[in-house]
Structure formats: C-alpha cells, structure tokens
Amino acid sequence: MSAVITPAVLAETTEQYKEQVDRITGFAERVHIDIADGEFAPTTTVDVKDLWAPEGWTIDIHLMANDVDSYVPRLIALRPHLLIVHAEATGDVSAALRLIQQAGIKAGLALLRPTVPRTVDALVKQADHVLIFSGELGKFGGTASLMQLEKIRLIKALNPEAEIGWDGGVMVDNAYSLVQGGVDVLNVGGAIQKSSDPHAMFTKLQQEITKTGVLG
Image 1 (cartoon, rainbow, N blue to C red):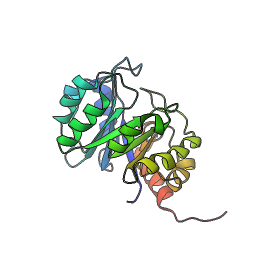
Image 2: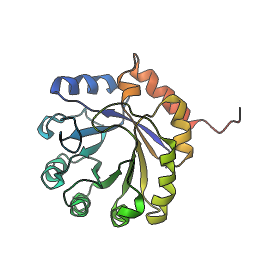
Image 3: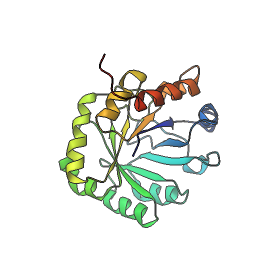
Image 4: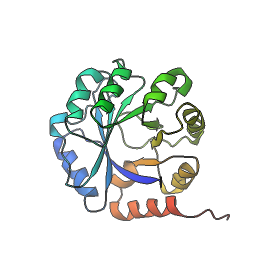
C-alpha cells in the first residue's frame, strides 16, 4: 500500500472538536480521532457521544483508555474504519481486538515507547494494524524518535500483514524517513492543526512521502 497522511483530532471540548474538524475539512480523507480517559492518558477528551465527522471521511479511532470493556462497544457502534486500543491498557485487550474484528472493523494495537513487541506478541499477531506511539499521551506534539522504527522489523516478524501506523512528532523533515522505514499511516496532529495553513501543510507532507529517493 502507499503511505498516507492522516490528520488527527484531539479535543477536550466540543468547541475544540468542531474547530479541529473544520480545519481539516475539504482535504482530509482518512482522519485519526483521539479519545482519552483522563486516566491512561492525562487528558480527558470529548465524550464518545459527541463524536461526528463529515460525510465521506475514513475514520480511525485511537482509544487511550484503560477501560476498553466499556469504551469499545460504544466506539464499534460508530462504525469506524479502524479502532485502536493500547497494549498497555488494564482491560482485556485481546477480547477487545476480537470484538472489533467480529464487528467487521479493523482492529489496531498501539504500543507505547517502552513496550517491546515480543512482550505482547500474541496481541501483535491478532491485530490488523499496529500503531507505534512516539508522542505524548493526550497531547499534540511529542518527538518522532526514529529509534522506534526498529519495532517495525520486530512487528513484521510476528505479523507480516499488519498495517503500520506512527503517532507522534511527524513533520516535513522526518515524514520521508518514516515512510522509508516502513510506516504506512502517518498520523499528524500538531504539524497540521497548529499550522497557519493546514491544507498547505498536508500537501507538503504528502509530497514528502511520495517523493522518489534522491541523494543530496
């Protein structure tokens, strides 16, 4: 598959949510929506019942919450394209992945920076998508630690078919390196949402990931 730039929405209020959706409407096709519980992640985002999206968007939902058992059925009801849960959540992550897949939705597994794929190998094998999380939980920004790219080789050894996502610190100057390292889906929050021209930034990022290799 060709790599894609996926703008992110991370909002603590319904007003912020609308502002962020409006900023990427008109050019975004696949969008990453963050939900945080204030416990697993220090931020509390808008409630599940307040989620909405323009017609035609492909929606990925990233759940930064411990209580996957109560969140996942409510998020499945929204029929997203992909629903990502954290390997480090205290709930039954394997059951959550199974429930998502049984609903005909792609099941994603997110790994925090300290989490080594082999320590959660059964979950990695079960997932359709594995998200390498290099950001700060519940915040835009963070640093794209390219050392984390090493996880891709380890993930692919366990699950060759898994789509690979990246979350945290994606910018124009590292997007190409991330794609060359094997990332399929680059989730971009701050670089697009905080830009004075979100559409231009999105276009620039897309150009970066589709350029052919040039030594210079």
